[in-house]
Image (cartoon, rainbow, N blue to C red; front, side, top):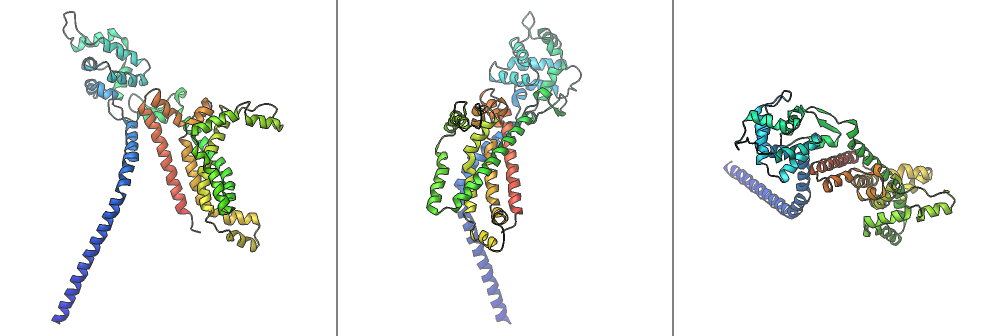
Length: 422
């Protein structure tokens, strides 16, 4: 019995040691794998995650008022936003504008408040130039005197609307830009409401962006599917040559291709001359600076992104499947539609997702070939970035495009998981 107990204990100790060695070996393998992917993870963190995080943060940042007028903001925290501000609030405003340097901080404050109420920029500049407020003897004024002096300087300081604009932007973070990108805003008391009808443009722009992208995706699918199918039926040598021809546009700048379409689509261009020579139209068609030109050029540029995933899927489908269906009595078209096409759904989904996502971020093509009513969201992102230097609005619009892209990825992932394996 003692011998059996000793052998059992020895076997248990050996098993425990073996388990420890196995866990150590697995830990070493995990560490080695992590070391191998660490450079890629760091690259993705620095190139994608950090910039995207900065974009999303900038979209909700609202530091101009809180940074430039800290004393005024502190005094207005307890204000009911209906009655007149206290004398202490007027004194705090004068103190903040006195210490505020005439530079980037003052300009940022004026621009931000001018967004709330047109004309606020001139009010801030006029008041800042009058600082500090002193009496005839050169002494600083009392709070009650400062109130009187500011109202004498500009009667708008007696209007509670101008003070509510400061109070509403007292936080360093605000949904102002995100709401503005969705044609909404916060009123003076923080309630969310729709913007005035004359200022509701961004939902229309987003709708236009998705419509253009959907049409381009559909056009690329209708053109790319038969072309990819034809290439997949060729021999290896001819298929490689055809794919080279498909990929040639990648070696040409998008700007050059857009310029070429401008030449081709103009009234005296090759397209209109060919249509008139064939008798299809008595006069040149308007193909430039409208939606038609945008569709043609974007479809041409994005067509390879549809063909490549379709071709990769079609190449792996055995031709014997259709022949077997036909030999069993199926019509050739029915065999193609019910046997072949369902097997290409992954390629259709991947190509459509790729083309659509690339389309919603397009800027150059609509800007050069489209009219004022054909500009997409990316045009306004560039406008706020380069012209008005409104980074908050640009980041908010870009963040909404990012959200739309993530939603599309989620829908695509759910759709592909739901498909039964063939």
